[in-house]
Figure 1 (spheres, rainbow, N blue to C red):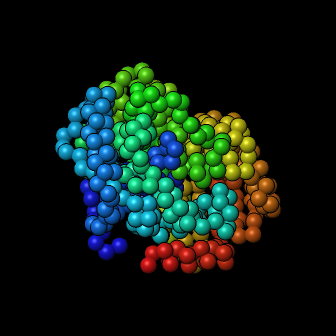
Figure 2: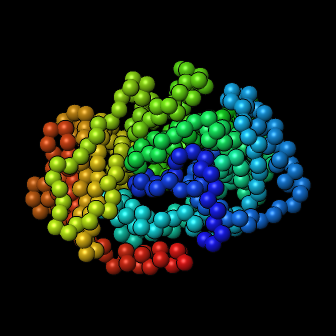
Figure 3: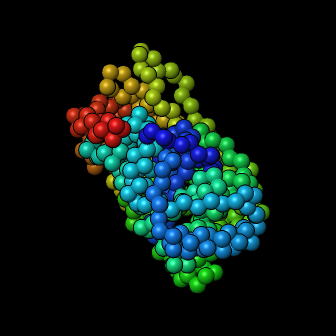
Length: 417
Ligand SMILES: [Zn+2]
């Protein structure tokens, strides 16, 4: 990572991760597969590959046309010149695929996902995260639009134009809106849903107004839960923004930036957002001491719970049991390679508690956990208690890393250097 250049941040959101409150880094990189665009934070080095002149000329000409279209459609004028860079896929994988990972954070995230049975003990989260960077089609940072040569065809005006419209919307967001750094994963996913939903809607309107037909829409139940977590802002952000746009137009969308959604629940149920619904703040009374070190405190949210349940249960059941979420807090502690995880989830009604607890106990049975007591379970590498009190559920897990995780850690270390 020598010569890494920290460019101006486009908007105050960072890498998509359903779990970890990543610190805000320097850069955003949208990744487009079909009509889905993903944003994650990366560093850009000074030396970018050069591309033949015809391609660049065609792309820059299209960019100028799309800029005019976006200004008229979105009702906002660019304050500064927009610059343009062409990258290659190889360069993107090398620099953006590996550059952005914070290995400690990935390790923490992996531990939580494994402890909650969302991924298997052999799953390598680092590889999973690197793999997604190869699909980057276009990106933006500050006032620069980046496109990837192999995936971006400037002669395909509908598709290339809609990608540019998406990126240019991000540039306008950076110029006009001031976003606060999200404090939890759930807050971050909600904010990303606004940012990407707005950009996707503008991209779609470009596509539609230039003769584009119906788009391929990827549905949540067709995706693996891990991919669904990654795609959340694209799957549900546009519907959220469109809901507000239909009721209040672009000025209503602009207002969203003054009071952005703070939970995936508000994005999934936009009517709740418009009613002014906000999640409750959950916290623990009891302190954890005796040498345990706090590694993470976070809020995971309704959409995370839905994917955790969906890993083992039907889409319908997962959807229903995750609904009624009204707040959560998760804490991860470490001591001598053993982890202590506690997660308090608040629900709207006692019925919601029952639904969730019943579904979670089904998962424990499916992963072959042994029931030790009314509320206590044991698997090969963790013990777990599930307790209910009023409208609150608390899950406490003691988790010991198994040998396959040590192997995973070795790969993580190799990637860094
Ligand atoms: Zn984007």
